[in-house]
Length: 219
Image 1 (cartoon, rainbow, N blue to C red):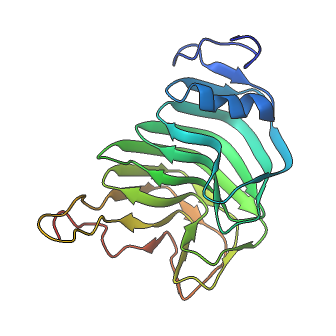
Image 2: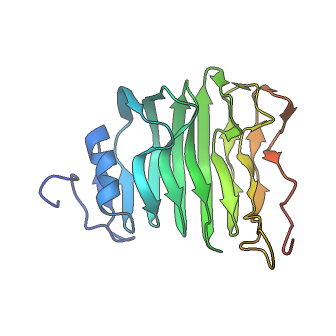
């Protein structure tokens, strides 16, 4: 469909675009508000993502069903990169993500009081080394809410940064220079989630790294 961008589908929830290769996966960036389903394991074969970038750049607002398949082979030569750069009113579910460098599933979830669901996702991999605040699933939540449902982390982490955690790096707050706060902190729920890996950092978290602001509604 769409001149070969995908192997089928129209991008709706009932007829998602069908993906069977790494190149087709990257075409998600051209349809960030659509629905997608994997039909095969995806291997990026060592493709390198620049720092702060995503294999899918931009803000994803659609649904992605991994259909139980595995995504692997992404690398970064920086402190952190991402599978999906940003998430907003999005659902990611049903896939395995294999990593051996600091690549999170996403940098920012639930921005601007929106909702994100991460469900039935497993992260596997060798020891992830990062010098920044990092998580294997989601680095930050901005103001909205994220549900982590039946997610499993099997990738150990080691770093000199203050905060490392498997699922969520922290809740970001926009600090005002004066007056009322620009943005409230976000929130998250963990339902049936398990961390099976070692986390080595100054302040390691079993689920969340920096949880200082997780219930803040006013600074």
